[in-house]
Length: 382
Image 1 (cartoon, rainbow, N blue to C red):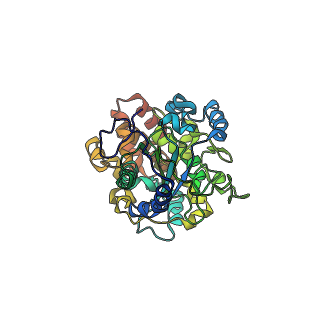
Image 2: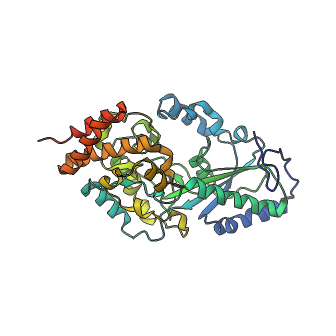
Image 3: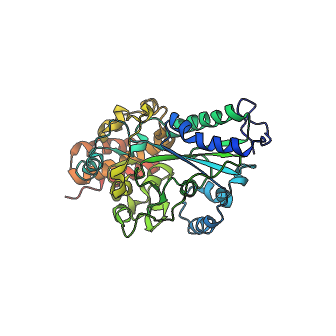
């Protein structure tokens, strides 16, 4: 396994530097300020013993809830063993970065529900995906934070992660004191809700621990709003999500056809789903980000389905350059739009939707897309 080395060949192994306890304390105390300089809202430092999380991970995998995300099963328990994922790791710095754009209105949740429930011809994309690809933003800023540590003590072993490897992010964030695991499985913070990204730096420095972990469900109580709101009943039990039913999985990770039994429930969502977060009472405290990276691109802020359908593949690639959306590719993008237009046709009876679907069906050479087009045309009754 590569050992990241600041200022040196990134593939060179690095022996853990000898750093005295006083310096380690000073580093731990300085980290929150350095993290804030990079746009992070909160950080914590935790150990690497995740043994108690292994049984739950195995049960989730054995139930097949990971769907086509075969890499999760391939890595197995490595996700719960940071030192196997990156040898030499003794601590994990867990960081939170809020992502709602700075101009987000106070009633953003109500507006989102209005679009979902009363504007079926409008395309809905998860809030996190409307700006720059968060992988790029967090990875760069986590690396700068890692470089800041190196500026104090010299080269050391570390590796940066941003939803880019088999890491139990929520478990680490909980142990680092960044919040608790909500019943929707996302990290919740009392004064920030769940509208934030998580990132980690695995390090070989024995920094003093920072952050008092809270027990699972610490502040969810008897609330079941997220479970009740899920359009496809993907939250099969508190703290347990069947990804195969989750709209975020279906519209992003699922390759090939979307199960017909779930298409109507997708509604006008074409990339991801925020419903469990919109329903969560704690998200009335969700914070906005000062970073311009997360500002919604105009063409993705409130697009209508018919406009997005006019994009050809070069336009799609151009408009989604530097966006997380680009990773699903042109084929899945069209598939998602077809499902949403079929649902819009069912709800509104707007002949424009039927016309574009019919024209696309008559010239479609991809059997999977052709089947979705046939389904979409058949959704209007009467």
